[in-house]
Length: 435
Image 1 (tube, rainbow, N blue to C red):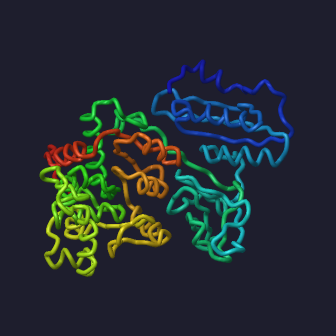
Image 2 (cartoon, rainbow, N blue to C red):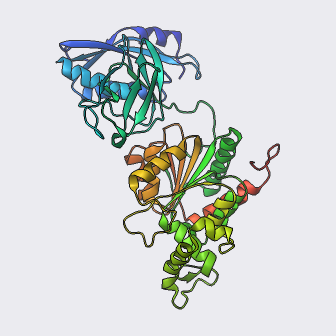
Image 3 (cartoon, rainbow, N blue to C red):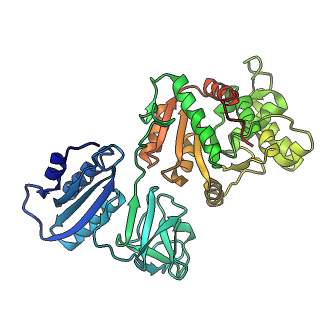
């Protein structure tokens, strides 16, 4: 944001709400690109919505677009409890107390449960103040608590189910600050795809943006995660995904029993849900194929043994094993079989997924609401996420559940994957395929 010296001088004067100041007061500060990202007006609105009042004690707006801005705001409330609630809410939006305290923690008194008044995390980068020094919270994830190791000077997100008696858990909002992901200052591959659901924008431009982001992620040494549903196989897209894996663009794959089953059904019978992927017509007794495929794999001792023995010679599962892709198959209540590699304990599946998202820089979620939302809950806010689905409600659900960084493309998955595979196979000047 740009401002003249006169505007800066005006902004530096104290500004306050018309309401009479409330009984207790604290001071917060926000810094960064707080105007063009709408962070400052959002914070002022939240103060009023929660029954408080504010005075802007200082506000310095950056002169150039690249310059950060700064605001120091007095927050008033009727009671100390109301003030604590307001300050706690503002911290999650990126504000910090002017006079911060050290973080407070109490030992957990019940296994698999947080203490009362525990701090609930967001997917934004979070820091806690320990011995007067701000430290990063590790393994950032929404809807967790924060565990503390005072001696080691460490803090990390911990799911409720993994709380043990005596583990120090952060309580309240003192000594916590959140560093929101700011809007990119320069043009980026995601610049064109500015809205959350891209249903009417030219698909070719959006697709090139996705390809550029995947290339950039691999160039940075980070992993690309694909989360896929069975529609990938039903629409005849298995070979496109297999190509992406074979060429080294995908390092991690999350899916359920269905994607793996129908991929193996195609490899063994040439059908998906009993429909020929060559002729597009149902074949005789085809409705049995998915169950027979599961049975064949179980008799072989699992997917890995079926591939090693030469029983399975093509498809997504085949390429995952040949390219050493980190494969996590998380089951659900409706699964047939399931396949031996499918994790049927949801807690175990969550933990495997948590391990696998470390180091992911880009996530591509395709045609699966269940696994897409589950993955979105595990990803920190700075990981780019693209969701491709014929149903726009899938993207909306992701955003509603907190994965606000998701960019949505409403389209059929087959033309998208075919075009993406072709785009990434095309050589770019000065670049080569990933290793």
